[in-house]
Image (cartoon, each protein chain N blue to C red):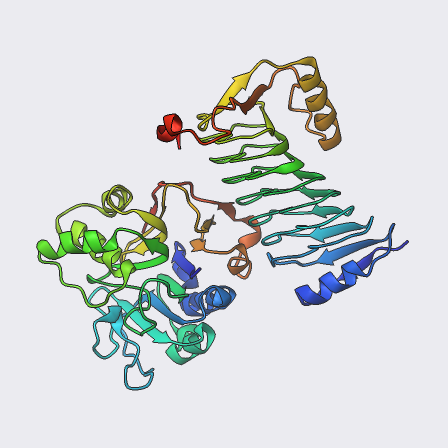
Length: 224
Length: 252
């Protein structure tokens, strides 16, 4: 099927994208950093956003495969349910925030609070992430190909973070754990999916929750 | 919310287009601050024709007729839609070497011309703020005890007067902004300019947006990426987000 090319107002573009049947493809031309493009899709469609995009790109979506040929603003793939959002550039703050399923791939760097409150999805960043990555992440996987900023994995629940580069500092209740064979396999599969050849799956640092802050305890008051 | 835009020219060849470029940027952050807006333009000393009602756009909230200060800084502020105000100010026709703009969504004090940004408590100094300060009343009392006089209840004015006071005491702008990080509690992305400097600083958790773009011809700082895309040569700009409590400063 020939890909549809869309321009114009964000609402019109999103309406046209939501009308696409499974297997269809569309390109959003000249996005000029506009917000909310390709949010709330619910079909197996391929969407290419051909240039820099704004906030919440591909958020709330199911099944769709979205590629952005440029950087994105805050909250890319926020609350994603399934499918994939692939950013061929940098991502601003809160990439994949609260995402429940699917895969968010950022080829470049991701800014602060990447994967904040992640709820089951996977975030793979080829470059580095800013401070507070994985804050309160409840479930899912975070892979960082470069370095991680301060406060990595602060107040983590069951999400797991793998970092190929340096970690500026760990957040409260985050700890480094031994890499198991299952971890290596998870990272190897993810590296292959994302084409992140620069990451050696056997040479990443695993960060997970020390589980001391699961329940509020006045003895831990200083840690909050 | 609130929106910030700023443009610092390295290439004076663009000076004639400064106002036009800033007006385009300001229009892209219109939704971030529909209450009121203001601009500060650094250029030649000029006479301002635009008046807005009886209050009039005022330089630095000083409550007098619009004028250019001794350094060539013209501040114009007003209440209402930012795009309509820019037109009223005649922004697109203004030239110079540096300009800042602000669109306000008020949280800490009333929507008035005086409470609009930029705040210019000292010749050549301009401050625009996105965020809110938690301890502004405490800092205000401390500054008042040192003889600093305020004109509004606005929290951003406190930051502007604090920076102005530090410059009066002999600190350079970078030092003054580092002290802002030490003294102020709250959320802030600040763009602070003097007639020769253009500086950006964010709070420790950097929860208010800021994007900087730089080319050989200009440096721009904006709240949102889309405010950058109309700038000449933006395709080849180095674009980055300033990190928490980093002071980024350019000097002509």
